[in-house]
Amino acid sequence: MKDFSKYNTKELWNNDLKHNMHPFTDFSSFKKEGSLIMAESEGAYVFDTDGRKYLDGIAGLWCVNIGYGNEEMGQAMLDQTRRIPYYSSFGHLTTPPAVELSAKLASLAPKSLSHVFYGTGGSMSNDTAVRMVHFYFNRIGKPNKKQIITRTDGYHGSTYLSMTLTGVEYDHIGFDLAPDLVHRVSAPNVYRRPAGMTVPEYCDFLVNEVEQKILSIGPENVAMFVAEPIAGAGGVLVPPEGYHQRVAAVCKKYGVFILSDEVVTAFGRLGEMFSSEKIFGFTPDIITCAKGLTSGYIPLSANMISDEIYDVISVPQAEGASFTHGFTYSGHPVSCAVGLKNIEIMERIDLCGHVREVGKYFENQLIEKLSDLPLVGDVRGSHFMMCIESVANKETKELLDPNIAIGNRIADKCQAVGLLVRPLAHKNILSPPLTLTVAEVDFIVSTLHKAILDVQDDLVKEGLWHG
Ligand code: PLP
Image: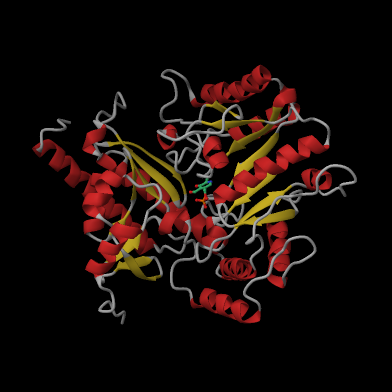
């Protein structure tokens, strides 16, 4: 039995409000409502300080892939802490877990990406990718080849550079970006594609847009194209069939590298350890991953780097600088030991196989049971990466007034009955632990169904929506 009497919710709540500055927070509502404080966990469930239990439809933040409370993960942490809790990997130093995890990751990633560089989060790894590629082009005597192309609604992190890569406009409001580095092309938003365009025509349009963008900047100036296989925080945007392969062919034609940001899509969320090659059929030059790499139990991220890039940036530096990039916690032995244990567990229980079966059921059930609801415009995604987009009008796809905060209303109804789903403006995101059972899938689908209908009733009563 879990003991919640040790938590003083009121005191925690007050001190949180006073001293703990949260990331990505609307302080107007935060200062009124404060926080929901999560204290305990087990399997697919989390518990707040008052002992209320919630099925975590978000897996923390797309990350607790193997589920909560795994004792083996705790043991791996303890064992490695006892052996050696930290050592630097600068220069000629390393530790056994950093080496072993690198070899394991190289065996799982596309064959040509056999070099691993560690960080402690997705933003840091995307930032690293830009620095590495710029260094590469300096090394081969093409110092002008530095421009980066990213997509509207792509999310790549919130360091200065990774937020500059990020194309979610809402995230830019009031902040500055690194000027003159990044150019944008359209996100593949099939649901909101131009009226009258078929999906294959839309794919042609998107691929052509990338090519035209490269040509307009000048291929001699373009270093890299950056994209998530499925854009996550931008609204779970699944590209049209063949999109990534065709964009990759365009990039290859002009000597433009591809960074595939697999911070969300790696480690099983779509049923494979890495999705770029196995699911989308293209081989990037760099893959960044984080989150599911340790199932969020400890911070760790990795860049998988191609032999082509490695062979240039690792050439002994007779003239010019050495490779001056890295972090105190790059290759942290405890994080790497936990990453190794996480992958061992995933392989032992065939978590990817489970996702291919139960994740597909989740996807199909959400589409089947929710698509016809009057407020639901689109249910999209793949396996355990899903999104529900609400609209005022199914025909015109017109949105409700943002002040209605439809995503929050749906999330609040779900939370009241023990389900956490993530609101993002007029969307609700679902990215549960990958261990979800069929019964848990059914609970999520039926709870959401009722929540959306209840919100619909409220809107009618409040005179905010008339159907
Ligand atoms: N890339 C993607 C696709 C993400 O979804 C995220 C975070 O959600 C990041 C990068 C940034 O990762 P982090 O928050 O670990 O810096």
